[in-house]
Length: 128
Image (tube, rainbow, N blue to C red):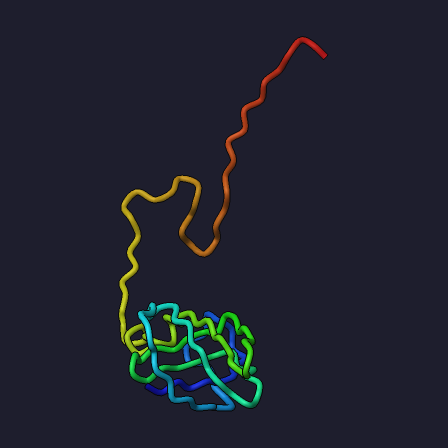
């Protein structure tokens, strides 16, 4: 199975991230794992300083949330699925319809000029 590591400077809520500095590893999972948050052990003679990953077999992109350095040049990468990038084709191809309810909010005017109305009750007392 292939794991591709990248660097990205885009924010987490961006669709169509710019990926640079690709580094490829051949990995094998030896135990059960979670496809949404896998943990990967890599042996590398150079430091792993990436912040993004892609596993083509799963068709999913991942944020690298944490990297732990183990003995003997082993790096433990904690991944978290980037749903926006993994399913960007479906998201961009989807269509939606927004409608307005028959009875709207009494305190909101849906036109260009909006206003907020406040109900204020005054209580008077004979004491100071």
